[in-house]
Amino acid sequence: MEKDPKKLEKLESQTPQKGEKMKFIGTRGTDREKSFSEVILNPSAPNGGLYVPKKFPRLDLKWLQRFYTPEQEPNYHKIAKGVLKKFKVDLPEEAIQRAIYTYLKNFDVEEVVPLHKVNNLFVAELWHGPTRAFKDIALQPFGVLLSHLAQSRGENYLIMAATSGDTGPATLKSFENLPNTKVVCLYPSEGTSEVQRLQMVTTDAPNERVLGILGDFDDAQTALKSLLKEEEFRKSLDEVGLKLSAANSVNFGRIIFQTAYHYWSYLTLWERFEIEGGEKIDVVIPSGNFGNALGAFYAKQMGLPIDRIIITSNRNSVLYEFVKFGKYDLRERKLIKTTSPAMDILKSSNVERLLFHKFGEARTIELMKNLEEEGYFQLTPEELEMIQADFDADFCTDGEGAEIIRKYAEKYHYLVDPHTATALKGAEKLRGDNKMVVYSTAEWTKFAPTVYYALTGEPVERVIAQEEEVEVIPDKDAIAYIETHLGVTPPPQILELFQKPETNSKIIPKSAIREEILKFVKGEE
Image (cartoon, rainbow, N blue to C red; front, side):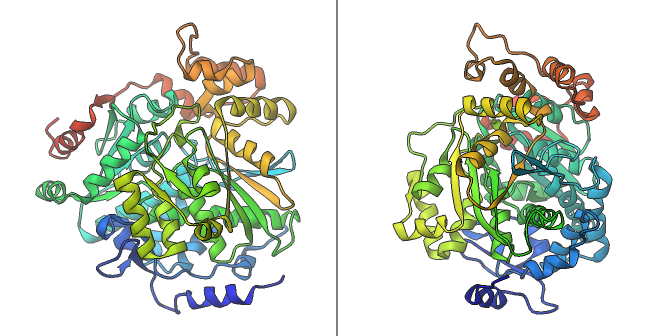
């Protein structure tokens, strides 16, 4: 394997010294360096920024080779634990072990992330956790770690989550009944699939509250970020003995776990003799908030042989425009409802972290100020070239996604959800000489009506537009049809949703978010 001396020199200079714990700084300046446990518990960096590692460990092929066992599949939990160890997190061994144990306990496959060869592509299924979406991989161990830290400090935390459909259910499942925690989940009342909604509104854990808002995901995320920064809100929580944290990918505790499966995918290809050690691969990621893609970027920077990180969007194509043209333009732009609602996002939080790593603090502050105040920023040609050194992008319409779902079901006997369909479309369009890993981020059961219409030929554009003459098939009936006609078995936790009472289905205007949260934590409802 050839090695780039300059890249190795850079990585070696950024590698923490033996025994040194990882430190974090803010993207818009920092009052002091923070530890990993501090940024998990309090993810709000100074001046509205996000926390990032001051230095990166070196997790290259030499490191990965220790897990190489061609006689058998590698153990995912060992790689995840290895990543935490290399980041030198300030957590006791017992807490790390309990967090990683969630992969053995709460996932329905031994590999955690099965890798299938489909149409000469390799599809990594990230959705075998309890809520059938990729967010489980980060949030299952994350909840254990945060609860442990809260207990060890004798503190109680309110964990807030804003969701476009997957983060919410995964957060609720992770934190249900965990000591020293309360959870508030915000979701757009008409912006998720029915299964995603049921996963949230049927929760009955006494430490959790779910609030549907009359708005979209960006409204929910904006409210979350605003409350994280608001001193008066924190004082109100202090009065009832609560501190404030967040489960969205603004919290680096989420991102660290989203690097591990990129190493797993590479190692699995290597073990199966699909690639040689050191051979570069491309990864294709359906992305809305950019956390999944950022995990791939970090893995590449730390030494994993990734060539292109291909971002695929739906019609809310801000990330496509960012990667292709270097612009982020929200002026006169409204969120479009699509059949891949988990990516119905215009304000991608983790882009700020990428800007910081590429261009530094001063330029990040300038670009983010332009975006926040003017709704727009434009990279220079030189900056765009730096982004495109690592990234490529595509976007997918609802109709194109439906064609992919139907094609892969009929031709390859492989059933995918609409988010994975955007990635498959991008993979086909942008395929090069490298082997490609396509990340499947959700199971088809979470979007069964869309899959049903794709398979039966009903134009999905009419469905998403809610045209009066189109009667939308209920999720339960769509699942039953697909199970019968394709011979696939939906998991029991999805089928059980349709029998559970809705115990947490309150819907509120955006203006009432703060008041409702305080009523919950004060026990006034």
